[in-house]
Image 1 (cartoon, one colour):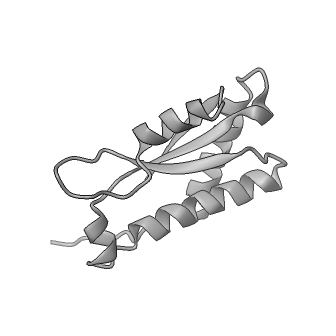
Image 2 (cartoon, helix red, strand yellow; image 1 turned 180 degrees about the vertical axis):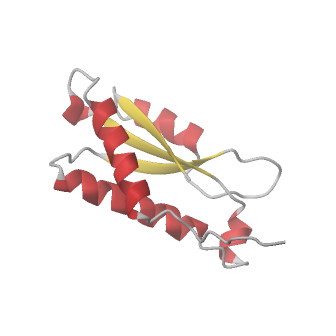
Length: 120
């Protein structure tokens, strides 16, 4: 059986530009686009995958967010942003910060407008 392996694509130019185009479009729907917090939410993995097994996922997601924000800045979009992780289950420690906890904290800290951006 023939197969093709697709390496991580988080840093691919087409993916980054597609994400930036979507974010730029969605920000225009807010009354004050420049005051919107961009909230990146990535699927979580158990912390042990990263710390013990050496999975590059956390670093890849952080780099992905950095690349998206760099492209947004080239377009003069300089909103505040954050990254959190979702979908934890079971009794083990997962990547933090957790999406649900972060949303609550942002609200407590006065964030009024949030654009949720799922990344993978």
